[in-house]
Length: 455
Image (tube, rainbow, N blue to C red; front, side, top):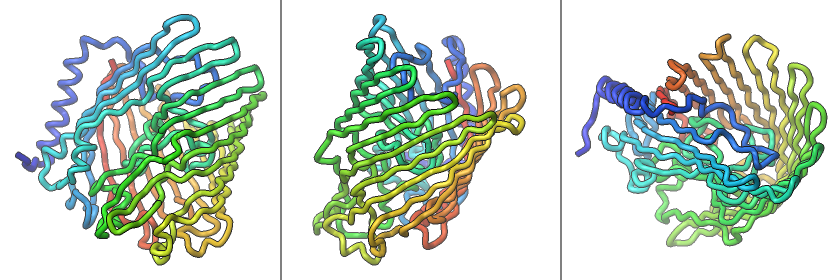
C-alpha cells in the first residue's frame, strides 16, 4: 500500500540505508579507487584496460523544489527520487592478445512505493522503479602490433564539444533528465566492431554498429517526458528502431607535438527520433538516415588547451514549427546543417580549470517552416575546482542553449569522508521562457544528496 512519508522520515531512511551499506560492505573493501574519476573512453590503444575490478554502491535522495505542472506524474513540491544503485566493472586478460571487460549497473527507486503524491504511469513504473543497464561487454583482440579489434557492447566518444552533438554521433544518449547526470553517464553503449590501426603519428578507427538504437527518452508522465505537448492528442505515440540497422563510422587522427586533429566520416541513423508518419491510429517516431563529415582538433600551449570542432550533417530531419506541424504528418523536412564549436580550457588559476565553449548552428535552405532559426548560437561555461588536498571537488556548469532557448545551471559538490566513502550534492536550475522549446520543463529544479561506497 502506498503511503506518504514526511521529509524527516525520508531523510532517516536515506541515512539508515547508507550506514547499512557501509557496515555490510566494509569487510569486502578491496579497492578504494575513485570510480567517478575522469575516464578517457576515446582510447587509441584498444588493448589498454582499466583496473581489473571496481565496484560501488550509491544511495541518492532527490528533492524537486517546484511543482512540475499539469500532465506530469509528480504534481507537488517534494521528493522525486530515492534511488539505490550498484555499479560494477570487471576486466580480465585471457592471453597476451585477448582481454575483455564488463561494466554494468542496476537501479532501484523506492520513491514510487513511498510517496503517494507521485502517480506514475505504467510505463514510468516499469522503466524507472527497477532497471538494469549494461555499459560495456567486449573483447579486445590484438590482431597484430598495429591492428586491434574491440568487439561487443562499448561506449565510443569522438569529438570535442560537450554541449552540442557535432562529431560525437556514435553513442546514443541517456536523455532521461537534463544535466542531472554526469557526462560519463550520459553516453550509452552500442554493439560494435571497432578496428584500430595505430602508429606513432596516426590512428585510424573504423566502427561498424548494428541495431544501436536511439536516445533513451523519459517515459509517459515523467518530469522530462519529451512528448508531453502531444499527450493530449487522440493518437498514441509509438517509437521504432531504424529499418537500416547497420551504421558506419571512420576517423583518421593525427597526433603531433602538443595536439591532434581528426577527420571523421559517418553514415548513420540519427539518434534523435523524428516523426515518420501520422495516422489516425498512432503517431510513429523513428530514426532517419543522415551522413556526417567533421573535423576536430585540440592544441595545448602552456596553461591553455584550445579546442575546435566543425561538422556538416547532411539530410538531417528537423522538427517543424508548431504552426506547420500538420503540414509534415508524412515525415519531417530534411536540411543540411553546419555546426561548429570553438573553446578552451585554462588551468592557470590556483586549483581551478576554467572551460568555455562557443557554438554556432547554421541550417541551409528555407527555415521558415522549422522550429529553429537559420542561425543559432549557444555557449557553455564550466568550472572545476579542488582544494589543495584534492578532497573537496566543485563542478559548476552554465549553459546557454542554442538560440538562447533557455539556460541551465548546475553545481556539484563532492567530498571523501574516507578512502572508500564519499558524499556529494547536486543543484540544477532550469530557466526557460514561454517561447522556448523546453518551457514545459521549467519547474524541474532539483537538489540532490548522495553517499557512495567503493569496495
